[in-house]
Image (tube, rainbow, N blue to C red):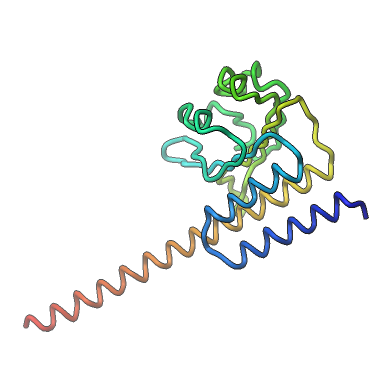
Length: 189
């Protein structure tokens, strides 16, 4: 096994360990974004979560992008590399001219040459995208694509775990409040 593949496995194990040790979604997504940048030696990475009602992609985590770029405007789910929201890997070779990108001028100002957009899915439903940004046009090897896909899947699991925990916690708190109200009601009578 080559050194790069061993490195991929170690990083993947570290991400799995973090997912198993915390329900802090931001921590897990930041770890994924940062490590993708370091392992693949790329410019940046961002993880976007799909807000279906607003038809928007919201930044869940990023590494290597400027605040100016991150605040350029809303990322429209119907205008920004839409094919990845349909479950496909999409490589945009020229992010400054490709009509699939929503902000080509901002990509140029940020020094982004190419974008790889990968769906993040849970139980067959796309819930977001992982985007990889390069400063030079680049193709990704099969091993890199598999590594990226595996981390996107782990991101999906982390997102689902955090959402389920939040839902359960919210329901628990609601139930506790209802029990308190019930006892308070009984005291009044």
